[in-house]
Image (cartoon, rainbow, N blue to C red; front, top):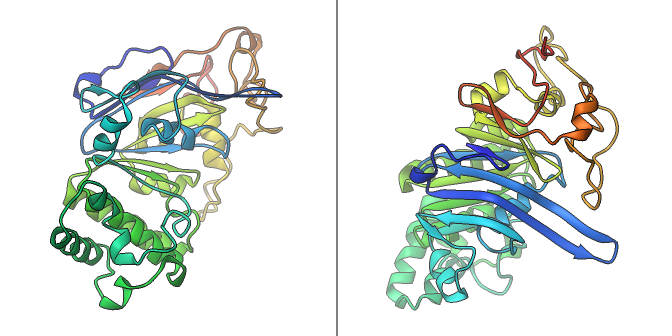
Length: 334
C-alpha cells in the first residue's frame, strides 16, 4: 500500500518500505518541497512502477531510497533494516543489494574505463580478486547481449545508447543485487531499442530473482513492466494499485488525465475525461489542501480546505481524492 500518513498493510513482508518520506531543498527563493509524506511498500519479486509528469518527485523519491539524496525526514527500511541513519560504511555494503540504472546511459559510465572494467567496478571496491572480476565481467556481459569480445575493450563514447544501457545493467547485476531501481532507463533511447531493454530487464528480473522499482513518465512503458503502479503529482501520491486495475479503472482524476494524454490506436475509444487545464504549480509554494485542485475539473471548496488522505477506493486500489472517479470511463461520483 502507498499513501500519506496511512498504515502499511503489508510492511512486515516488504523488502523495501518507505514511510512518510520528505525531501526538501532550502534555497534563497524558498524551500522546494520535492517529496512530501510519501509512503509505499514493495514486496520481494514485485515490480513497482512510479509514474507522473516531470517535476512530480518520482526520481527524487527513488534517489532518496538509496540515500543518493538525503531525506529531510521519514523512514526507509530495506530487508528489515532502517537505513536512513546508517553510516557511510554500512551504506556501501547495503548498496551492493540496492543497485540503480540511470536515465542517461553514457553519462552514468566512467568515460576513461573500458567496458570490461566498468561492469565490475563494484566488485573492485569490495576487494574481489582479479580472476573473479574477469569471470563476472564476461558472465554479465553475455547475459545482457554484449558477450562479443569486441565490446569488452570499448570506451563508453564508442557505444550506442542501447549498448551503453546494457553495460549499465550488467554493472548493476555484477554485485548480485536484490533490489533494482530503474530511473527512466529507456527514455533516452529509440523506440525499437526501448522494447529490447524492457524485455531484457524483465528476463533478468526472473533469472536473478530481482525486486524492481521502475520510474518513468511513459505510461505505456510502466504498464508493460509493472505489477503495481504509484502515480505522483507535485511530491504527493495520487493513486496506488494493481497496474491493470489502475489503468482500466483509474480512481483519481489526475490518473485519468494522464491516461487520456496517451494517443490511442482504436478510434472507438475516445477521450474519457475529465480534461485538465493550466500548468503544474511550483513546488516552492504548493496549493493548500489537495495539490491537484488548481487543475482538477472536479475540485470543490473542500479540496482547498482539507488535504485528502490516501484511502481504499476499491479492493486493493487507493487514491488521495475527496471525489474519486467511479468507472473506467471517467464517470464522476454521484
